Length: 114
Length: 115
Image (cartoon, rainbow over all chains, first blue to last red; front, side, top):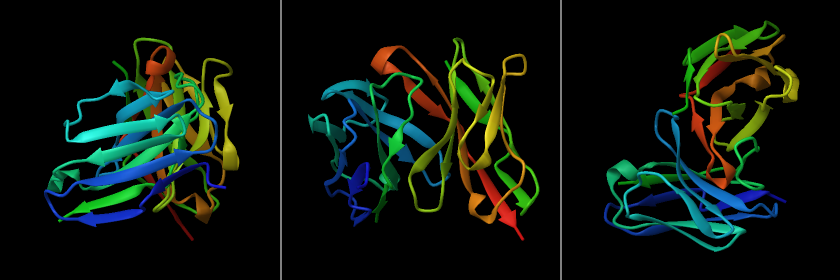
C-alpha cells in the first residue's frame, strides 16, 4: 500500500484553465503539506494542514486553494493556470507536524502549463 | 530565520569510493536537521535526521552525517558509493514550535556515480 498517494502523476493543460491535484495518506497522520519543486529542483513549502485546519500558508497566489475534507486528504485546486505554475507538486504528511518529525512524500505531480 | 547551504550542486564519484556531500546551516534556535534523497521521478525519502541527541547520526543505506555546531555543518558521508546512490540529495533544516514548524530545503546536490 502506498503511504502517500497523489493523482494525477502528470497534468498537461492550457493557460487559463482550472485544475486540481488530489492527495491521500493512509498513515493516520495529523499533518499534511503541499510543496512545489521548480525546474532547478528547489523545494518550497506552500501549505500545511493539521487536522483539517490551515497552519502554514506561504506567500502563494490566491489562485491556489488547498482543501482538506478530512485529515487523510489534502487537495490542491489551481485557478487560471499560468506558465509559471509549471513545476512538480509534492504532497507530504507527518504524524503531528512538529519540527523533528520525518515527512513522508508522495511521488509528485508534474504540472505542465502550455 | 533558518537556512541551509549545500556547497556543491553536483558531485561525481567512482563506485566504491567515499561520498561527501556538504551542508552548512544557519538557525537562531536548536535546529532539527535532515538529509533527504530523491531518485529520478520519485518522491523524497528520509536518509537520516539529527534532533539534538548524538552528533553522529547513522541513516539508511550506509549513510551517516555529523552535526558540528562550531562549524554549523551537517555533512553527509558514505564510505563506499554504489551505483544505486546516484540521486539528488537535499539538506533540510526545520525550526518552529508545535504544528507550525516547517522545513527549509537546500538547493540540492546531484550525486553521480561512475563505474
